[in-house]
Image (tube, rainbow, N blue to C red; front, side):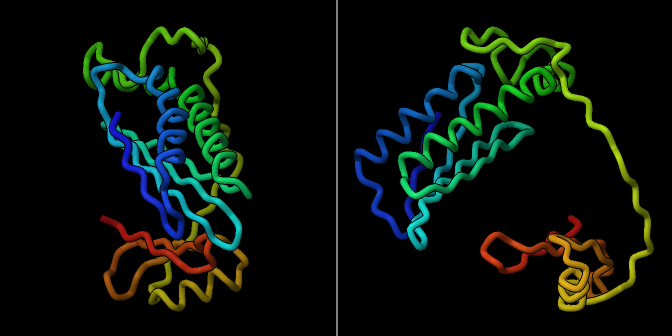
Length: 182
C-alpha cells in the first residue's frame, strides 16, 4: 500500500508519518497481496481536536473512517481500530461478492492468521420502516429550509433546476452538502 499523508493546520513530522504508516500497515494482512491501493490520510487540528481521516479506495469498494480525540496519536489508533472492525465485519460478504464477480480472486485474504470470520456470523439487515412520498419540485435553498424545519440530517427532493432527484444533508462542520443524481 502507498500512503499519502497530509496535514491541515498541522505539521506532519517524520515521527508522526512513521507512526501513521506503522499503524496502518496492520491492515495489509487483510488484503490480497496482489491488490495495491493508495491510502489517503488527512491529519487535522481544529480547536484542540485532532482528527484523522483515512480513505482506502479499492476496486469496487471504498473503506473510510474518521476519528477525533485530544491527541493525534490516539486518533490514529482509534481510526485504525475502526477500519479493522469494518474490514472484519464485511470480510466474508465482500469476498463472496468479489469471487462471484471476478472468478476466484478475492479482495481480502481468505486465511488471515489473527482473525477468523465464520460464514454464519454474517449480519442480517432488518428493514423496520418504509416511507413513500411524492417529490415536490423545489430549489436547493427550499430543500435546506424543509430539512431544518423537520429537524432531519438529510432531505430528499426533486430539484426544480436540474429536474433530478437530489439529497441535501447537514455536514459535521455545520454547513450543507448536496448529492446529485449522476
